[in-house]
Length: 591
Image (cartoon, rainbow, N blue to C red):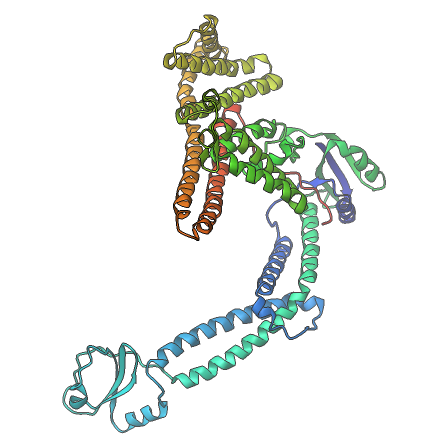
């Protein structure tokens, strides 16, 4: 990145920023949050546009409602947002009112039709009214003889009745009184009808406004451009009693010539220099056709800080192969490979993601080939292969150890990368302790393997292990005091527990792959049993195979996506010494 420092008269800053926006190459140092009432106003306005567009698009997706659209509605573009918000607010209020009315109607129906005036006249005659709801099985017929009781309504399981009490002896009844509705069902139904007409009219107007979503989006982008420009201007430091504006911008170094040609026509004084880490410049990743596909995965964690090495090219092959180990089935890998290739041609706007899926599918063909798993079955069992060929496929225990060994390879690779980066940036001595760790981990793996499967290895391997240990103790600290230096080196050996924990984390590669294979085997087993059904067994078996394997594919792919990501961001990034914290390159430009 190249850093540009601009000095302009304050009144010239605004038109200069607008010209920079048309250039679309300069990332202006700006604040991420609203800094004053104007920026907050613009941000809130963008949010209002987003909500309005979202509400209209949601409404337009409802095919039944779209049939009720009765035509266009004429509205001035300046009033489009406020009218959409008003109609949306009214829609919410009417929906709530209708829900309340329907709940009230359900309660009123229980008591049958009645007249409120009649009830009031009874009260005027001196009667106290008591309303009850009772289960039919608990209703006693003698109550009608003992009390002045009238049944208002009978339903399948309940009886609703009223008791008229005059000023006689103390009134008692064995049931608790029920809540009586304020008005009869007929009045509520009438209001529901009126509310539904209002809703239908309002929905029709909203659907008509849906034709203006493109205009709303255009207005929103205009506000977004104004907001972006305002935030860039607001980042300028104002000096000399606000008559001069000073601000910074960053652009890719390969675009220097374009920017210099642009600046020749501008009345601006600027200083051009190479960006430094302390300037906190933005980060623009540059990878080849393969590694670029894995950039979205790395961005889920964080970008490298400026000047830090991008790890995408280094974790991409591991991630692809780890995904294949976790998916654990060549058949599923073949499906992903074909789906990714088709999507890359049929959906060009998602071409990058489709290619990523295709490469992950390729990895899911290569790695499960070790165990020979294909749609839940074992190739060694499906075909009549020679015994020496069958012996090439790994059993479960071999896959278990392969996952751990593969993890150790990544850890050693990460330590070597850490050493190379340190030597390149800080000198030879800065990377020697990580070289020591790489040697010690490799020696420890060879030594342990020799205890499990006895074999002879050259004597110099042991000397290499001692050399690695010495590199760790001597070069972990750069303190000039020899005793402090050695103490910190010995203390650093405690990190071997972390290496052991990292190694165990890779067992998940074996566990997930084995689980996916077992689930596929269960689908095949159930399908074969369904195939035994007379006449239609073949149909049931086909449905089970298709639906079952699709389900297992989605479940396995989810785990295969998440867990290698965890191994990358925790084990691999930690052992490479990755810090991160960079911000993405976001040039000021017209949308």
